[in-house]
Length: 107
Length: 107
Image (cartoon, rainbow over all chains, first blue to last red; front, side):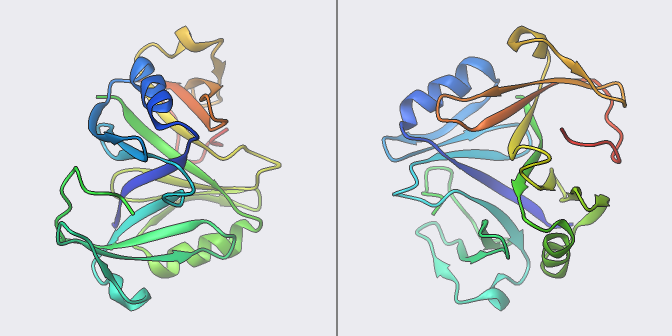
């Protein structure tokens, strides 16, 4: 089965949101700056994003992501393409097996 | 670390959405009816929900969910409470260790 790499949800203030999640859940802060944060749960990462900076989305790891569009290379060597599902949900399809350093932007 | 149990995203037509995801990703259909569907990825379940029926949300498994509000029991013996994060994202906090049959509604 394919895996979800991360889920990115919209927030207006990254620090406030990150504090809220950290106060309630046992997570590891992988990255945080004023434009986005990445919190690690046991099975998946949760990204907190400002919609003007990164679209809220879910990211799927796929063994042949390029069949869905031109892959954009990220600084960590990973590559992905964004597509919309039929109802406007944004899906990032990431090439499975590509590296992504925790500190790299999700989008 | 706590785990995310599922992510529920909004769609207008469950069957069309489920077909779209199944055509692109290697997932297992755990449940599907006209009001919602549950697709299993390798590490997490993705729920496709009609917003009028179930709110889009993320679900976290927590060892003491009751501290966040009165738990609502589900038919499978699981229990959960819904809260809003500071920016309007809906978070279902599920009591960790509770059973939830795959065919049970997510909300």
